[in-house]
Length: 249
Image (cartoon, rainbow, N blue to C red; front, side):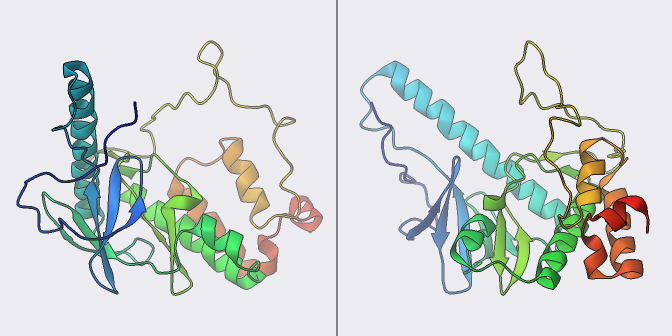
């Protein structure tokens, strides 16, 4: 049986009736005007569910979705304003008002547009590295890093979707705080060996990618510092992982 359509019941919700322009696992994106959207929890109607078990299951999902929105609200409040994060105008118990990124998410943008030139790609990569470094400095660990959660606004990248992110105390040492993710077989979780990983030769910041994979950075700020050095001292083209880069010539 398919779950009922999500809606917002009889709550005095100021966003009830707004058109849905985006649908996520735990939330909905509603359009407010040409410059703003609001993210609300995906809440399913329970009135037409006859089974007590099904009703209980759906209410459990509703509560998870509400808690996820509450967590995301706290993350936006912690992060504040930053050029690499989608602008948050307002938060409330009902939703999170955000800037409308009309160019969509990066995954869709890449699929629908010609490949950008080297300079633009470098700017994008450096922007993301810098933004993640800032986010870590604010005691936030981003759980779901994916192209679909990076928005494109006026040609610039903006991180969004922090519902699953981990909010640490501001006094926590993010450099030494480890959060394990078991993406592999639980019976034998292990990172691929160097020979099993794809080559980074010829890629933008290929040397940085390779060092990330091998665990050579202590923090996001270390990654950011090396990216800035590559650009400042070597220029955009040195961001390529070429034979010259690997041999130091």
